[in-house]
Image (tube, rainbow, N blue to C red; front, top):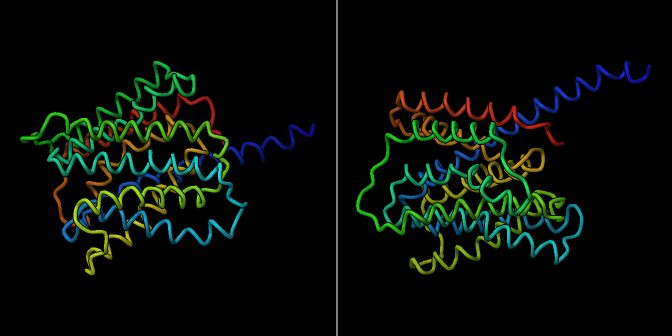
Length: 307
């Protein structure tokens, strides 16, 4: 009798849970795409690694007081794990595609490679988690990838680039996929997001400082465009995008979360159209639709939403 009486409340709770996850994933796509907009703001005012260094450093320093005073004490063992995740997830991923672009790999092609993250997660899931994608999940991932190819393919221009440079975004994507899976199985996965993000940002800043110093400077550029771009990258792309990425990862599976990121290239194109007047194309609209189909297939193949 009691179970029947509470059944409507359980169903309402499940509906709200699904609704919350959908909102979380929509916000993730928007803020993840915002990172490209922030780079666009700052790229004309500073080298790429100087931008990444100050983005990571400012993000970590803003979070540091909260990480030290709010929540459970940070143990050295947990902190060292987050340093590793920061080196893989932030430094490896961001440096991989940034270096590729600096060597002349077309930005559109880099975007395509980095958006193969779900396939990289699937590739590494068996040795790390002992899991493998079902046939339906593979189908959805491949359809999502086809949507990205349709949406972004018009911008590709191979150019004269050393062949090995095309492997850099692949390594960056595999680095983020590895960090994603390691965090999913790590006992430190219970650390509050703001604490783990703080440690990862500071560890990434230390690595990016070496690249920035090699480029010629680590001091900031006192320019409105550079400062505005850094603030955007810190408060929207880092606090928004990476925080939501890790939060979504805790609420759902790595496959679902990374598949959602298939929507980032079309959304980035819409941002560029609104903010910079860059033209849209029917290829972008078609790719968006195809990606949505792939995402729906993968999402429905999940047995349950983990909360």
